[in-house]
Amino acid sequence: MINRRSLRVKVLQLLFSYYNQVVYKEDKKKLQLEISKQLHQSILDIEKSYFEVISLLIVLKNINEEKKQIAKKELIKKSTSRFNLSDNRIINFLEKNTQIIDGLIKHKNGWNTKTEKIRNWYNVLLQEEFYKNYVTIEKPKFEEDFDFLQNLIVKFLFKNNDIQKSFEEENIFWNEDFLIIKSMIKKTLKTLNSSNFNTFATASLSEDIKDDIKFACSLFDCVIDNSTEYDGHISKYAKNWDIERISLMDRTILRMGIGEMVNFSNIPVKVSINECIDIAKNYSSPKSGKFINGLLDVISLNLLKEKKIIKTGKGLIDNK
Image 1 (cartoon, rainbow, N blue to C red):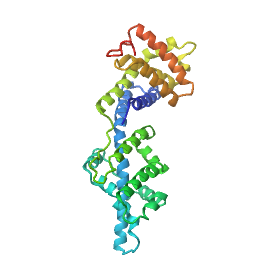
Image 2 (cartoon, rainbow, N blue to C red):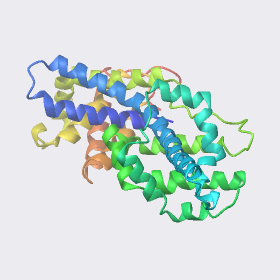
Image 3 (spheres, rainbow, N blue to C red):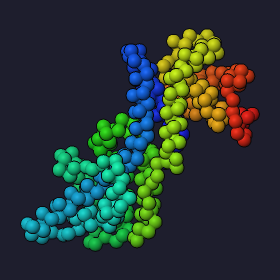
Image 4 (cartoon, helix red, strand yellow):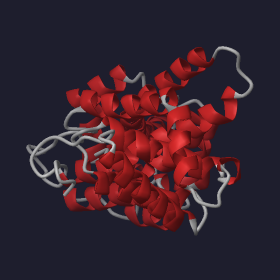
């Protein structure tokens, strides 16, 4: 499930993209609108990628089914266990499940079994040790089908470099979204561990996706709309630092922190600052966290005095 940290990271990345491009654009508002739409879509694309992973399971199963039918026509007498994938109870259930079908239709998912790269992935799969072990089992039990499915996802789909690269090409935020998608798949697997599938449910991206999108897009827009003002605060309190000497990434994180503190009355100042510190540690230089912590702390204290930061709600008035 997506969380506010993930949303802040998306906002940061697209703010950074905006600031890198805006110096070359005459129509700044048009650029802002374009990137805001990209932000909106990038959030929805997490669910799309989730269904693409499930779709890929089904496609690999279908290729195995094709091989099985060819073997039947050619009267090839070999152990049928090499077609265990085509008979996997869980993947067959997913293929026919209405929640999965609706999700695939909604996001226009669908890998082509005839695509060369898919066929190549299938051939690589045949060499995996867990696959070789699976096809030695005559008439696998449900638990063995389930174990194979887990291995197929964790050891193959999430580990194969070519598959990961393909997902990255489809979704430029794949690396950032991967942990969310992985957790959604893991949650789905937990609902599949019963042979009657009575607990099955697709994973939800968000409890309130509209609110999450509103938060992200509002934060993005308020930072851009007030960049000059926020830079003024940074310049005023960044002692011995010319704002142009502060890296663009650090400036973007600072602007985002100020924007959140000023414009979101229901988020404690300390939360906004701590989020910016942690994000800086991961997306900027090793010393950035400490620098951003000190500067946002000073800025927040002064903006609170000037009543430019006003918090409402229980536990927020005194910034606790």
